[in-house]
Image (tube, rainbow over all chains, first blue to last red; front, side):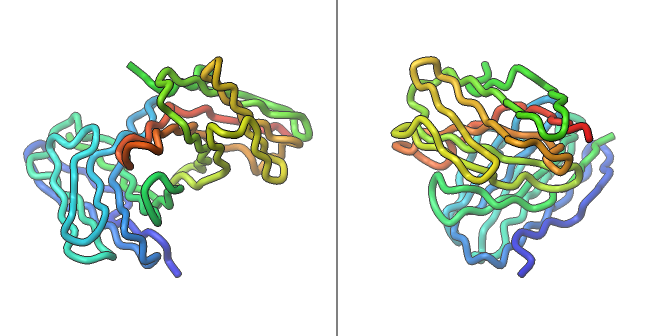
Length: 112
Length: 114
């Protein structure tokens, strides 16, 4: 029972490159989220999904895209990486709205 | 403008003593509060929560107190143990609206000294 699995754990990108951060869960939770954490800041919501086929923007969606074709997977896409996207990214799930979150171990991304 | 504030970036406590972590919020619509704990290189994990209909919630060594009039909550850890050394995030939400309104504070790094 792996919970929430994120890959990769670390990545260095050059400005303008693109990549996909993978997130998969085996908890059968409908709700999934992507957060970013910058040094000295709280986690900020990028995108979330309440079920397969449904996604919506969070607080800081610019520069990112998501898709949710299955309950298990919620990939986050960066199309044109910028230094401002250097951060630690966390995927999370929950059983329902306003319930406690279960987080993956994070992806540390540096854009140089 | 931070809606959830944790004004102490770090805190050091002796093993066996009480740790008190504080959190202030500005949005009076918040009615559900959670604490998460984070170890290095791991994701945050849920610790304890409290609804605004209560002023105290206890789970083992962890107690959260809520003072709605002051828009303040605190997490008490008694007794503190070295394994409690982590970053603690306070989070708040308005359960009457939606899931994208969970707001996290910047965190407090707790060090418990053996």
